[in-house]
Image (tube, rainbow, N blue to C red; front, top):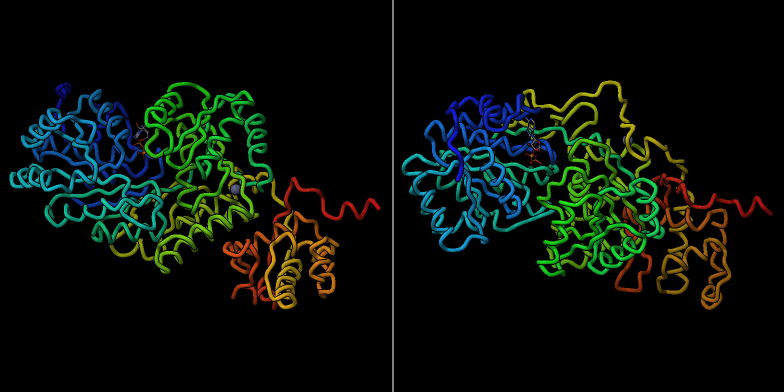
Length: 567
Ligand code: ADP
Ligand code: ZN
């Protein structure tokens, strides 16, 4: 079905022009292509939309033309395989895929062409690649030196620290062990230092050259606001800034996906739900409409999005907080792939912190694993609580200093990972702010919450001392603000020495203090005991005044102490 190529140049730039119709390589593409064409191993970290596909497609074509046979592309996503193979066919490249959508006869046909090395790029799922049957085919090719390279897409799937661990990726080490001379290129759009190290170790890429692009997505505007009534806030956000635009709204549960989709529909917005509980046919239909029609808002769980390449998504909204920064970056990265302005908008509140912590605590994983997950969650919490530039923090998490491209400090860029010229674009004179996030555009008021934090913690302590049991956040705040509630009277809590000593703080302010104390681990919520508050080892530093607590003043909350002034 594929057209014969008009020429057979092995020059990457000529292939770029002749096959793909592009006149120049982008960023580090050329260096990566040269490296792989020359037979080297590579680990490529490039943001979504950066142009990863050409990094292995061009070497595959060049090496095939030089008589070096077939490139095997490992990809976890069937939809993506179809798209890429379709596009390659249109460009006249002999590509094929092997996955569960093919019937027996089709599979046999592809296998026959593969055995004859008549395919330039073969896409296959990881579980397929490591079957004895497939390895036997590869053995036959390897014996005749007809295996040109292995490309491992979405390489973060090999790491349990990544956000999309797929155990079948682990078995891919067999490729290196069995076909040691065949170059490998692993690619991912997201990997923090830990995941990156894990990819190197798990895929035995110690000798691979690392190509790290800047992860900055300058057209995406990051905004994180305090969650009040999430659905209403979302409606207002869409009506104010994104009427008629395509967008994705992420929610944590299927139920919430359904509810939010209905609420948006009721408000006249073309919203569709998407989650793993829906029929495959319904999911497919909604996905197709999202891709083909204008202005569809997809309300979805994280089951939606990977491998979906829609260029004009104008906003990605999070109504619930993701697990970690990698997930947040990956999901928000689905906006603005066309380079036009897009919004990454998230509402976040105390309940998110509590939920995410609980999911870690209750997971069946080992304690070491949980500790890593908590660390990753903490990093996201500090991004959410930050009152300085979000972009600086986000990129900092990926080891990048904003304005100077990826940092080459740190163990991952050591001896075998020269960055030689692969640095991101420098933005001189930005002075650590991006001008395109909520905090840069509207610097929040910051107030010193240290005093409030100490008062809150000592109230938790005294209540526990006096009553022998713990209480929830609402009651503790009532005591602090000196409110004479039934519950206060019932337990005699008006006699506690901290009763009323926090009356100058609004409830919104105290909730902010509470959230931040929980976020920094200075206070815990015991979800097994009616969400009661418990002191932690981290509480002491705050109580002793050794740790300070800076808080952003919630812009939309009522001005503090206003009631007093009106008296
Ligand atoms: P990624 O896999 O990194 O998300 P893709 O490989 O899908 O990115 O590329 C994103 C888009 O950029 C595609 O439409 C691709 O055709 C285009 N592209 C990639 N490299 C170039 C280039 N050198 N010149 C022009 N367009 C390019
Ligand atoms: Zn900023």
